[in-house]
Image (cartoon, rainbow, N blue to C red; front, side, top):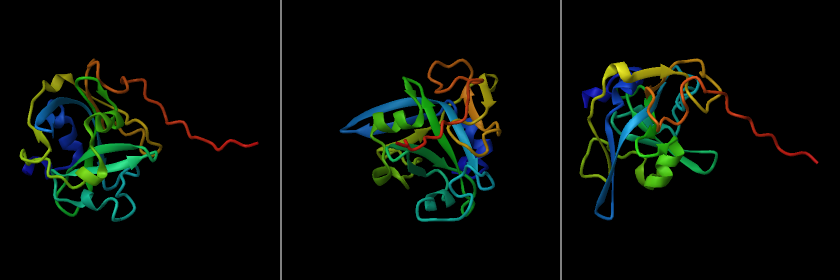
Length: 185
């Protein structure tokens, strides 16, 4: 789809208002996207910044597919691949309406995993995970710093709906992640 064959920076704010759909045992869950973050090839926080690897291969296209990765050894995160094929980029789904605050919560609550969903065509409504277009008033979209990363933090590449209760971190309350240190005896 041409919509996703553009820079993640252009796609990300326009994804707000789209719906993520998940079919499980014949029932469909639907949630409206309210917070996303963009990651591009030249971005030091992007998984494809240094090189192409088996882990980030999906990020190189085609666009409109799911890139799912594991963080902290326990949480999956769902991204939508953007950019023309061969150029890595993606939009991380950070929150959706209905209390799905944070990318790990969304994946946990909806049973989204790397093994099952990495490489899924999110534009195929016959799959068990797909997107449907939606719109929001552009005046409700705000750009702010990304969350939970240590590089490229200053870039205003997180987009969310102003004053939406399900945004994971309220704009202006972003902070660097705490680095865990090994306990010493």
